[in-house]
Every structure is written in C-alpha cells, then in structure tokens.
Image (cartoon, rainbow, N blue to C red; front, top):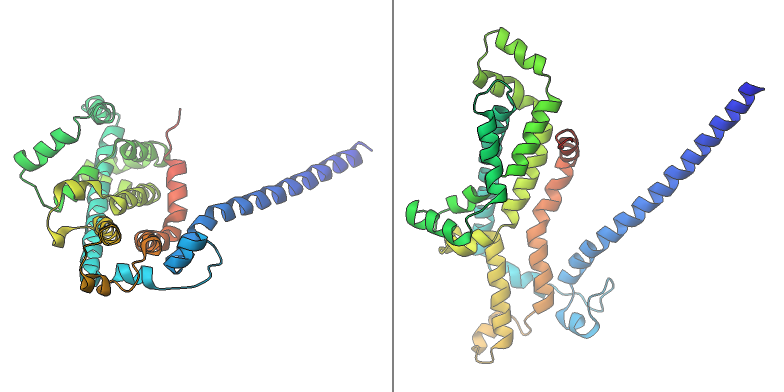
Length: 308
C-alpha cells in the first residue's frame, strides 16, 4: 500500500513537472516573439514607402512598399564597400590580438606560483576604477604615439578589457584541471608550450564567448573613428552610416540644395526608411554570425563566470 501511494505521488509530481515545463515553454515563446517583433518591424520599415511612414507611422502591414530607403544607402557603393572592409579588418584583427593578449595575461595571473601574480592583478583592476579621460587619451595617442588617422586607434583602445580577462582567468582556474598542467611540467614543458599546446586549445568556449563580445564592440564602435580618423579610406562602417544620415538630414532641412543633387537622390528623400536601412546594414552580419557562436557563447560565460 505504501508503495502504491508512493507511485501515485511520484506520478503526480511528473504531471506537475510536465505542466510547468509547458507553461515555461509558452512563456519563452511569447517572450521571444516580443523580442523579435522590433527587429521584424525594422526590416519591414526599411522597404516601406517613406510617404506611407509619414502618413500612417511604422506598421507591420504598410500601404506601399519601396526600395528608396535601401537605395539611398547603397548609392554610397564604393565607399560602403571600403567601409565594410575597414570594419571587418578592424574587427577581426582587434579580436584576434585582444584574445591572444588577454588569454596570456589570464594564464599568467592564474598561476599560483607566479611571483608577479598579485601585482598584475591589481594593475589590471586599476583602469576599471580610475581612467584618465578622453582628453588625456587623445593627447597620448596623437602627440606621444603619433597615431592620428591610423587604424591602430580603432584597434588598441578596445583591445583589452578587465572583465574579459577576469572571465578568461576564471575559466582557466575552474575549467582546466591543474593536474593537467602539472603533468605537462613534469614532462618538461615550459610555460609557453603549456599555454599554447594545452591551455589555449581547452579555452575555446571562453574564447568564443569573449571573442563574440569583442567583435560586437569593434563592429559597433564609432566614437574612436569620429575622434581620430580623417581619411575616407579609413572610415569604418558606423561612421559612414552616420555621414549618410547627416547628408539626408541636410538635404531635407536645406532649401538651397541644387536641383541636380536632389534629382540624384530621387524625387523624394527617404528619411525614415533610410534610417531603418542603415540599421539593417549594421546588424545584418552580426545576426548571421551569432547563431554559429551561440553554443560557445553560453558555455563560455557559464563555465567562466566569476564565482563567489
């Protein structure tokens, strides 16, 4: 009898657990739809006639479709291609260099027998608490280093982050067995060989997570380009899109614009749809790449999270 009652209780728990999972699934689906709807609205608005947006506002079911907004962005064809190349170069180079530097730094401060471990840990945290400001950074980069209008100024400022180093260091401590590194030392491997042949390959989940965050930061960065970059050949994508928006606003607000310039932009200048088109140009590559890194992104942040 007791066994029968126990089976009834366990079956009741399974039923409650099944209902809870279904409710959780429904809640997650609704939440996902709420998150996806604004992105869907951006894509629809980019191909909506600007007059329709002016009259009826943004809508999931526009009265009239148009390619004017996207054409206004694509008219900067050659410069758009150049800016894409600059952004991709800066994103890939900065992410690779940053991951290499930060992973080596994280490995060094994770070694309990390393003499400078405490000093380097404090040295790492100081910039997170105290910063010299934008003016001092500008003077150092331009007058001292002489890097004005250089692509290095799009790479170096975002290359190392204190939080990313902490994530990588915690992953090494919690995710890689110390016995494995000790065995490598017993076999005669030095620190460089231990790092590059053992530690670095095992850090792939955390490197993918941190690398994706770094790549997103590089891709969306515009402030450094606005401050340091003057040449069109070195202008990244974000700065070009800001220039496109400023040009459209100038054409809309200035009545003295020559007729041939307005004709080159078309009979109507798409203010709202072009704004949405620029958003698509920016977030498109990130949306394509993210699903491939999602698995490593979640695993890396979970294993490499800071534990209390």
